[in-house]
Length: 196
Image (cartoon, rainbow, N blue to C red; front, top):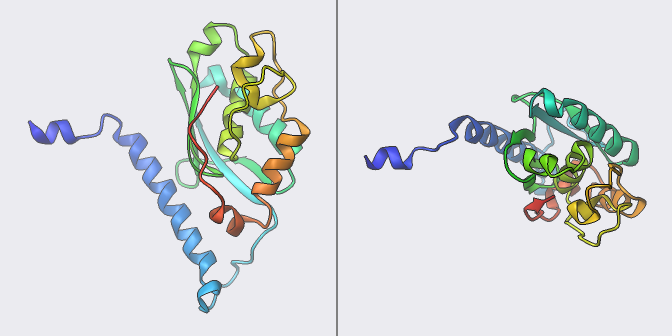
């Protein structure tokens, strides 16, 4: 009986999260070798652009929104780009949920996005929701000021707002977070839980 209560209700999610966390820690260790005076691994040259791989398991209802949100962020950013991956290389897991959208970031470029149908049923735009939640993955916090031109204003801009593109200040903030490539991102702050 005790064993049953200790088992996770979502073992597949936890396994993917464990794999992505393990990959991220292994990458951090490789990047830290030169800092410790140890030789770096061959072909491990740092890149100015960090690629964040995502695994989209949100289903067909969200596929167009995910594709457009990723394209919007990629067009706005110079130091980080999203790329489709799978459970073997993704640091971002995107899932559908029946509740309100939210993101549980682990660090900039890693975490889980829950794309919530509750917001869609209230009239909010799928692409704006997705782009907003990906903003949390990239290290941005909510800014509930009601301004539709600010992506991270989320639901405070109302259901008529369909802007799914980051503003110039938001794009600059993300570029600053990812400046210097993957090594700098690993030293960056851990974002807080974000809710649309």
